[in-house]
Image 1 (cartoon, rainbow, N blue to C red):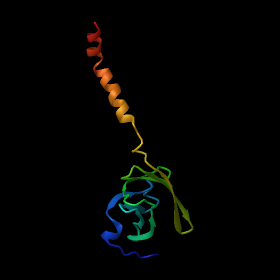
Image 2 (cartoon, helix red, strand yellow):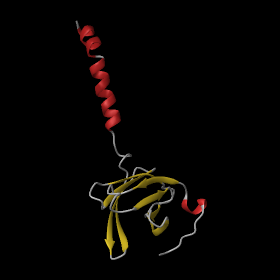
Image 3 (cartoon, rainbow, N blue to C red):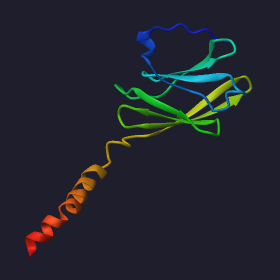
Image 4 (tube, one colour):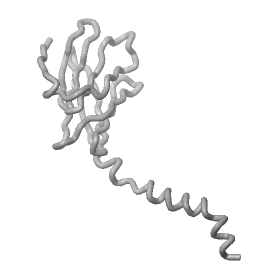
Amino acid sequence: MNTFQSSLDEDGHVVFVISDGKAAKKQWRIIGFSNGVLKRVSLDTLSVDQQFKVPTRSGEKLTCGLFSDNGMNFVMGTNQGTLIFASYKAVKKRCEINFCRIEDVGRTNTFDADFKSKTDLIMNRDLNDNDSE
């Protein structure tokens, strides 16, 4: 077992604590910090089993996380509109996490502008119809 010492400056602040939904079988949680550090914490020993670093860009911070019902996959969001999908796999007594990034998910969406213009047309339909008469 590895012992980790850290400070608030190194880890940022906690942004999520997730479990695989099978808490009765596996007594551990993944704690995500704003700077991309993930810690796998054992509830049996009240210690950090493993620590991972999510690949992030400069200035990018984790903002949220959610575990899938299958107990292997989870996803994290960042302040720059990126989704990071992760797959957790136990190998012997250690675990490995593979990451996949989908960038600019929230930045390339023009739905709001299109939706507003369509809503304005629908709301003003009666006014527009009356003007033509």
